[in-house]
Length: 265
Image (tube, rainbow, N blue to C red; front, top):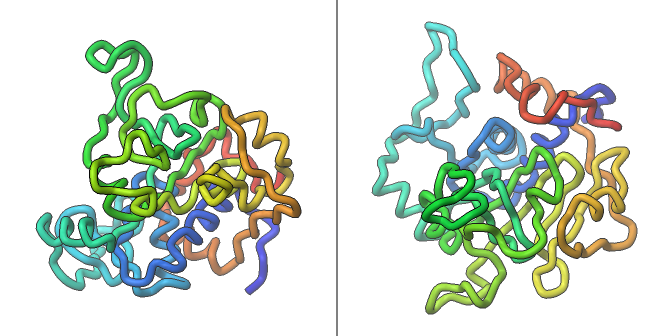
């Protein structure tokens, strides 16, 4: 497969995020947001055909739905029915992998999707809420996508409100251990990371083209694990770009990262 030379940063992130689902096998992929959803769909259509995906209502799909308005003659590829009871069976049995974008992430990998500043009873900013994230984060694999890597997201100190569990022994639910936490990948506009450093420290796995480790360090509010010889995030292939274009015919991906810059900076 030929590597592309003309691609956007959003397309690079989609391909990098798709890699998070590579070794999942038959798991339910839940991509929350345009880039995570396209990433899971790309993985399903290429290297992990066993990946499961729903139409976000009640059907399992054998082919991922494209984003946005579809032609009047579009028929989604329903394979089976999956109501809430079956969804929760997957969740509790660790047969799910969710990817979403928290507003804050701290050094433990704890995330915040709930509130910023003040007290929780009277925050400065109220957001989506924790929703099912507390249970999801202790029950199955999770990954994060961050479109703007900066110290407002990767904060110094603990999250203003902890919406999901991380590698923090002080906040583990009774009967659980750090082995139950699985924060698999963190994909940002600067790099790809995981929590595989010493004592579950956030670690750089690859740097996007034109980005240095110093840039990542300067935009992270806590200490990172920076290995020697960090590779460059692989460019999309022409085949992958064609698949992404088919999955996103209205080009919603162009609006997910500020100014939609080229993938090579």
